[in-house]
Every structure is written in structure tokens, then in C-alpha cells.
Image 1 (cartoon, rainbow, N blue to C red):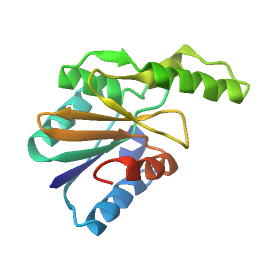
Image 2: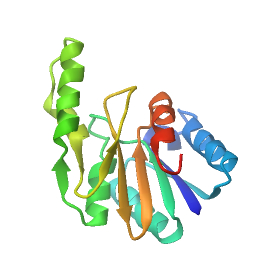
Image 3: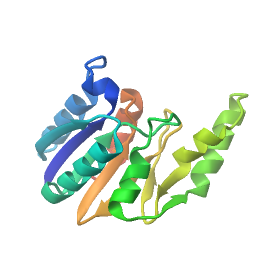
Length: 166
């Protein structure tokens, strides 16, 4: 099994934030006897993310992606993935309900920009996020398993063991 780790975000490429996700995912994969063949990173740019996803699909069996799942304007990894994979972006109702309950419990209003965290490519599955709001997403494209996880290290680390490769 060939694994690629793809980190997404301007903050990673600018050097302002140390990419500990790549190191953690590599260490965890190698310790399980899995071959990590590629590390790549892209900025918050639709074309760059699109190109990186297609390249990864051609050379890896499993792609572990981190970053770009939150509610902000530059968090659009799942939207780009859906376009890249030719999949319709659909609302995952259980996630929307979980998000609404999450905000209500904290006395905060559920804003429409948070709704995008409940959108997944049709045919994909969500990965539970017990540490934050954005769920992860698993999607099979061209026989490559893509796992999209949050860029926040504590959220990604909690989620990673729930993936079949984790």
C-alpha cells in the first residue's frame, strides 16, 4: 500500500505554522508497516488543490489530506475535491444536526458559513470529529482512498485512528 500525505493551507507553506500533521501521519503509518511514498503541500488555491488531488490519485493507494475543512472562506478542500472527483456536493443531514447541537450547547448561533462543514461529496462517508466541528470525509476515487481530516493537529490526531489505514 502506497500512502501520500497532502497538507493544505497557506499557513503551512508560508512557514508560519510548523507542519506537525505530516510528521505525525508519517510516523503513525511507518510504525504500522505502511509505506509513505510522498509528502506534498499546497496553498489555499482551487487549481493547486485540484492538481494535487489528481496527481495523488495516480500514484497512491491512500491519500491522507489535512486542512481546509473549517467554516472560513479559505476552507474549501471538500468543495474542490467534489469538483475534482466529478461528484455532487450534498448536505449530510446528521452532520448538520450535530453542528446545530454543538453551537446550541455553547450558546452560539448556527451560522450559514458553518453549514458548509456538513457538505460532502455524494458517495462519500463522514469521519467523526470529537474535538471540533468539521467532520472528516472518506471518498474513493480511481481506486484511491482519500481521507480528508482537519488541519488542527488535535482534531486530526483524534480522527486518524478511525480511518482504515489508521
